[in-house]
Structure formats: structure tokens, C-alpha cells
Image (cartoon, rainbow, N blue to C red; front, side, top):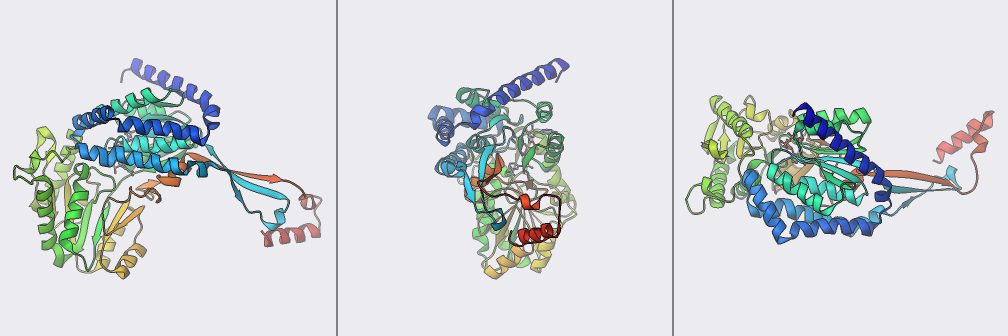
Length: 477
Ligand code: NAD
């Protein structure tokens, strides 16, 4: 960015920030019905045939995202969140009375949900609509003004996001600022009340440091390595097929997608057979080649293509066995779905989030070895536990930690709006979805009101009676 364009971006951002700040009281005063009407408008826009076509074309241009996935993993998810919010919002924003402790007789207390104010949503490219409009729905429900900064890596979809918001909202309420990292940095200098960031742990740290300057609250939806731990009494081929589906959704570029698999040594050959058969069934039904499938997206850019190819090369060099894949078409940013066995912890592929169509498999003799491998890494965003034994499932849950845990199925962690979604430490801070999504953009204001009585007996000058009364106060609190 040149000095002039930095100046233009900064003044544009400052202008919108000021406009939104001036509008905060008006937004705070809106009723649940008014907020719901805004969300319904967004839902109708996304479901409109012409707009959906424009979005599908944009996402195809960005990384050949298949149209069915555009609905299943983007528009449908936003729709389900909007519908859930619309069913619950009246209840959520109602002041909630809470009981009073005995020594405070004469007072009443309640919690008032008020908007945090001005929210910044920084979204990634991999589920760009889902992860911009999902948080937006909760921010609007809570009565905030919002600036969205979509990822520059999916430029066609970013333009769609901007057009949608420009069509539906006044910029004093919701605005989209497109741009590269430098634009995000200018935004992060502004004193937002809340920052909702979805992206990598590395950038998450930068966002949190910037938020600290203004003590803005944050929701950090990050990533990392999500393991699949396969235990006993499992139909291994069925699960291999489900894992293949979950892994290759969005071409492996899914934050909650299975990153690597740990399974008993005795199950390896069945897993390999089941995985390869499933990949071919899904993406090569007519034997024309997986690369001809319209149902497999592409990697987002050359940098990620090269990064993932390097991970495969490094693994092979260090002794991994290629069970399928490891073939490439650089011009198309295509890496064939790849299954690696004989993987060890020394390989680079076990040190960073893969974010591509490559599945490393490690085997174990005793379950505790698998848990050690998982526990040596930062706490994952999602943990998959596959087992026919409830005792074993409880054991694994008890001896590990993760933001979300999905048992005997895959990629479901983001689907149930009744559950909080988010990571823990390196995989995230704060939760999204359902009430937790609303809460993230809400200040739960505690209000305590004196109706009669007083605490004047505790005022100075102090005496022995004061301490005795103090003891009574805390004993019955
Ligand atoms: P990213 O962290 O590179 O970028 C995310 C956003 O941050 C983009 O809008 C980008 O412009 C901005 N950004 C990048 N560098 C910045 C900087 N130095 N300062 C300020 N802003 C900056 O992530 P990505 O590549 O877009 O997405 C992939 C990552 O996101 C993966 O790690 C994935 O696991 C994670 N992710 C997490 C979730 C979740 O819900 N937890 C969902 C999707 C993706």
C-alpha cells in the first residue's frame, strides 16, 4: 500500500467508525423485533436465487468451492443461526431477575443485556460467508454496530460480502472494509469494544495484543491440529469413509476437520483400504480421475499449495509411506487426496496445521501412547473420538482437553446451535454459536437496586459490633 492509499484507508475507516459511534444509542434502543427484521432481511438476501448464484460463482472463482458445499457449509449454516436467533432473541434480551442474598434484604437485582457497542469482525477465507455473517448475526442480535474485514485471499467472495452489506445496511450500522493485512492493522488500531477474529493462532496473537491496547474484549476462533483417536470395537471401514468425507470437505481447508489419525496397529490395513475406497467412491465415481471431480475444491493460493507439498515431501523424505495421492497439478493448485502412513512425530506434518487434503496416520500399541501424542501438542479446537466402548470414550475425554469433542462422527462440532463453539488457549478464546454467540457481543450489566433498608450499621466509626455484623453478613451471603 502506498502512503496515499494508507492515508485514504485510514480516513475512510475513521469516518465510518465515527458514524457508527454516533449511531450506537439508536442501535441500543432497537427492539428484538427490529433486530430480527434485519436478520431476516439478510437471510432472504442469501437465499434469493440470483444472489446465491452470484455467491456460488464467486466462490468457484476463488477456490472452486462446489455449489453444494456453498449451500451446506456457508449459506445454510448462516440461515440456521439466524433462525435460531430469531426464535430465542426475545428471551435473551429480556432483563433477568436474580435472587438476593439475605444480608442484602431490601434490594432487588437483575442482569440487563446491553450491546458492547462497536464490534470488529475479522474473518478468514476458508468459510468466508459463514464466518463473516454468522458472527454478524449475533452482533446485530445484541444491538451492536459492526465493521467486517473479510479475508483478501478470497477476493470474489469478499466483494460479494461487501455488496450484500452495502445493499442491506446503512454504513452507520454495518460496513465492510476490504483490504489486505495493512487494512486489518489500521482497523486494529481503532478502539473497538469487541473484536471477533477467526483465523490462525499466529494472527490471533497479533489481534489480542492490539485489543489489549484498548482493553477491547475478544473472541478468538483459531485453528490447530484436530486429532482423530480411534479406539476399540469400531467398524473401521465405515469410519474411514466418514473421515475421508470430513477431511476432504473444502479440500481439507476446514478448521474443525480431522488433521491426523491415531489408530491401533492392527486396524491400519483396513483403514487404508476403507479410506482409499471412500475417496474414489466420492470423487472418482466414473473413473475419470479425482482431479476431474467437480465436487473437490482447490487450495486457496500458491503459497498454501507449496506449503502443503513441502509437508508431504518432508514426510516422505523422513520415511512416510504414500498409500494414495502425493500427485500434483501446480497450475490448478491441486494436490490429490493423500494418505500417509508410517508417520512419526519428527515429521513437519505433525508440527503444523495441515489445512489441505492430506491425512497422516500414526499407529499405537496402547491407547495411552495415542493420548500422549495428543497431549504433547496444544489443546485442539476439535477432538474426534471413535470407539464402540463407552468406558473408553469416557477415559479419553477425561485424559485430554479440547474446545469441542465429537464422538463417533466428524465435522459436527459447528452444527448444534445449542452448544458453545470455540477452542481453548492455542485453538481459541471465547465461544460462538447460540446464546454464547450472543453473549460474546453483549455486556451482561449487573443492576442492583435498594428499595428499602440500609447498610449504615457498617459505616465508621467502627466498633466490635461492626465486626460481628460483618461476620453475620458474610456467613449468610
Ligand atoms: P489468517 O489468520 O491468515 O487470516 C485471517 C484474517 O486475519 C484475514 O482477514 C486476514 O486479512 C487477517 N490478517 C492476516 N494477517 C494479519 C495481521 N498480521 N494483522 C491483522 N490481521 C491479519 O487465517 P486464514 O488463512 O484466513 O484462515 C485459516 C486459519 O483460520 C486456520 O488456522 C484455521 O484453522 C483457522 N480457522 C478457524 C476457525 C474457527 O472457527 N475456529 C474457522 C475457520 C478458520
